[in-house]
Image (cartoon, rainbow, N blue to C red; front, side):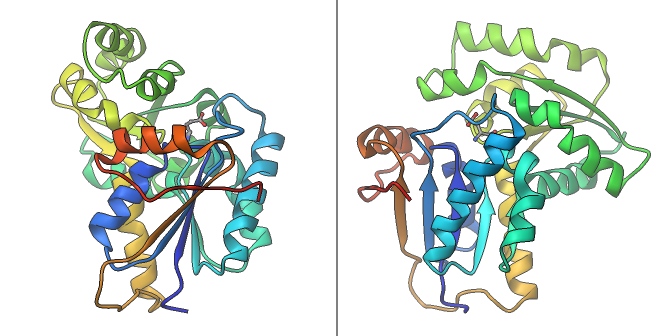
Length: 264
Ligand code: DGL
């Protein structure tokens, strides 16, 4: 079981922020990554649709005998985690729980902000998770739908980015939050700009949080891979691999092996 790969899926390329953190924190793990590039974005789709797509993605990974599945997509984690946990008997890790627990650890004032896609924010998944862990914490949320296309166009700095950040995050300045959760796979690429606009506020990146969380689960269940060499990686996509490969370079700052096209 230990030597089996970890499966990661996302609606597309964004989950590579999670893959990157996993490889930093547990570099000996083999990883199979699936990006549902034919059906991205998930961020404005209904719960029913996101559950259907997520279950198909998880089946694809389960068939490849992964020891656990990380749902890197915040929208899938928000809408489909419960469903997936009911269907699969391997650990299914989402990004919401990890992000919230890290935010609660670093916040002093317990006034926390979260930003994500429309469907993530509408699902109130972060609100529900916070309520479970700390009833007195206050959460302020906002959706930032233009961030994903900006990142996918490689527009990470400059006038347009600063203007969009100001438009979406202005209200957080008056809400006196001390911590902001980046509740979407793409937002870590805008982290320097966001941190610069919200000076003094701690930014929690859920990709990093979920990687720490994954390590603790694998350690607890004695499932950490103990191979000597660096883990291998395989990439699968549901639409043409070239576009994914190009964007992957932006997310990972390195080339990836050729992704394989699959219709799952
Ligand atoms: N992966 C999605 C998320 O983290 C963002 C992209 C999309 O809308 O599919 O919510």
